[in-house]
Image (tube, rainbow, N blue to C red):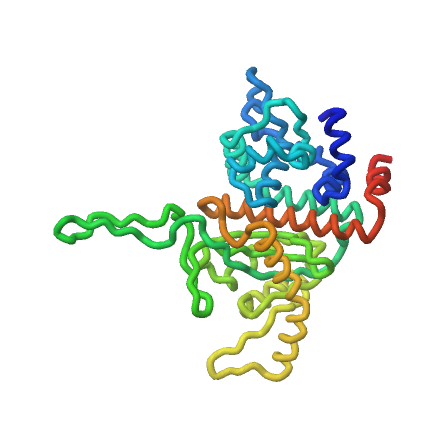
Length: 343
């Protein structure tokens, strides 16, 4: 996309904004190729109005998650916020996507299951820029609860005589109940693997909330890039003989905490290992904290596992970009990085 005089000037004024830094550093063309075909016209070649640029629309997905905006709020913000226009590449005075267009694009993106691939692509670029450790490293796996966007309780309709006429469940039919401690939650369980060096999110996976952690270990492990699997650390919720055997077969160092069983308390050496693993596990807990506190992951914004997982991916991408932008302040001037990439 060509850059107008307005966009070039505004980008210079906003050069210290973390998203603007990453906007200039990342190569968006591989992402454009991944997104090709989302617009039906990309495949059909039919006429009509030119669709909005797919990269600009993807950036809107990140902005909506970054600022916790609904589609309508995002439409209004795009019309008045210069930083939104600059990041997405929309110029002044041109027609901007409305809430319906934003919603339709988000749904198509979720249907094509591209969010995890986009997370991996951006991580690969951060590694190439030296902002994320490249090569063999460990991974920390954990899960968190993402509360449903729907009302959790069932609605029971009765006849005049008191007979049950109909039972209407939550509109979010894929969400499930789970109890943690003394509290019960209705929603989803989000699994994440972060690297042991800087805490970047490597992979994600989403299930209904009642899915057991121990049975999902292999699924999230398969999502982690092979280079990040020198060792895997996780809490006792992932402990099982099968999971330990899986790590052994894959040649991955076992960092699963031990769990006591009935009439079989932990031995002193197992307690010591658990304490050592706890010193590493804080990185995934901190990642969940950032994604929930800053990027709204504490509650799903849409119904269903697939859309909730896409939201999870956008939160992970945003956190990784923010982490990279903060790291950039401590390394070298972003202008020098940009010149190096373009050389």
